[in-house]
Length: 407
Image 1 (cartoon, rainbow, N blue to C red):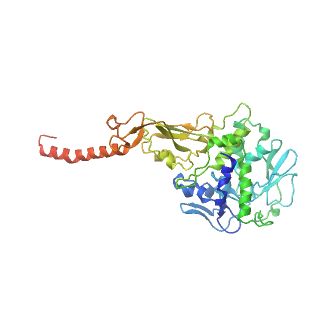
Image 2: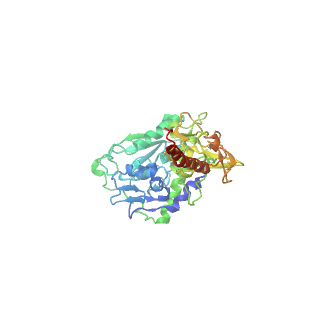
């Protein structure tokens, strides 16, 4: 998928509320579009508990701190907060110092980076900092304020992201010298402002300005080898069956592949999923493909053959495919071995037959459940089974009741 594909949805962003706070693209929200996935990542990440995910949309109450932790947790980038990684600093020697915007004065090393809250840095943004600064060590500054800050409430709100990213970097062979580090350099608590400085205060930002900033922000986080993106596929056309592109996941996988040490092309197993389809049970209803929120599963056809194919790069492991399969022919699980996530795999392959009853073409499984029904499409086979059952229920019972010798 080319970088432009991840930038494509930005025109759909709008403010959730007036003033400081996230912008949202609800068409990209899993919790809104596909409630059965149970995605409430942004809601769980909000330090002041004012963001709610409902089937009717995202709801934001008063009191947003503008920390961006909701956006950092979103797997599809349905949320964005101004002030994160709009520009990379020039120079600065061997260390890229990333600091909280609350810290007064310039301080620190030249070429440092300020963000509203370190907890608002997503995993893909942290990987981007490592990838785009090969000669510098990325250091997140700990000023000792996070526990007392309304946006923190913990020793360090970026700890989970940093731990994940460093573990993935180790798995692909990136030396520890390039891992992200926390450095404790406390400042007196009395110097901490109550609120995060508004990143748009010095230059008020309208919708056009925000979208321009967001486009650059997403492009920087998603940069990577475009051949891999192309193999991952473009987001589906925005029609009635439009799916959600998991932009954060694809950016993570692409950048890790770009960073992988020579001779270690495989990505961390924990990031990958595997889907298996039992051809003997599958009737190619294709419900797994039509209900997949990200189009990781899609139907394919070639000549008189068709089936379902799988794009590992866009699978978020939500389980919708497994839950919706009427034949229980599909199994989703974590991958047990390294694999190439940008190679689309064919999971099922069926020939085509013409139904002896309705004369419509249908997918013929490799092993039919019932040999007598092998010439009928699933709908006609179901009708015949139902009629046979009804006939037996009505006439078989009448015959038995008329014959006293029958048990």
